Length: 252
Image (cartoon, rainbow, N blue to C red; front, side, top):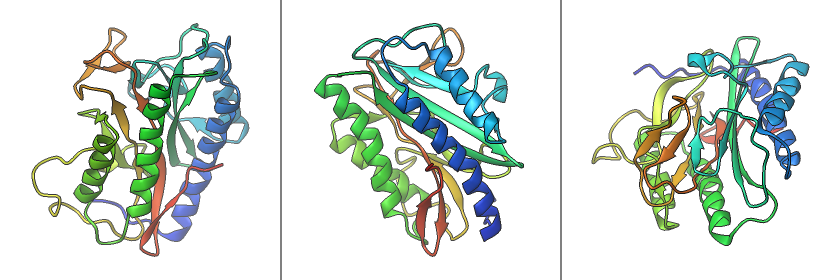
């Protein structure tokens, strides 16, 4: 497994691509209101990305038709934007990728529409807080499997379960690079596998189910839901390991 080690100037190029992602997500969060359609939100983010000199890297990636993954309610990841208009109490996830001068950015958030239930608030908090906790714990020399175990333990401690078969990943000159970083321990030994080193850049993205970790892909070949049919949540940041700890790149 060849995990790239980035020089400081390369990390700055990745930061520039990711800053645009962060700005686009902030724009979508601010415009998440009752009555707006998923396609309108998608177009808004695409306009923002292009106006900042980047391109929406998800558009056409593996055949995905849009700039933004809009994952509504029970859809946990990879939701395709539709004409659906947001309603009070919905939960909506946005996942955005960019490419700027050959370098890629990637991040995701899940946000409430108006007032949501305490259960949905806890669901969103699980993804966000697990992500920030994992990032705070990253140290040079720890293994990626230890990081996966930390995320799994955080998710389970909150009464939820991680989505199986999808994972975080390296990022750089391609949108998905080595390593794969599940939100759960794959195998028995967290002290095995590659170690985290200075210069590595990767995406962590807790994907949260309520009761069943098994993913089901819907008829459109993209929307991923849990076998329990319940709502999910998703948060993601791109981070770089600098001076022995992780720094978030995907902030506006």
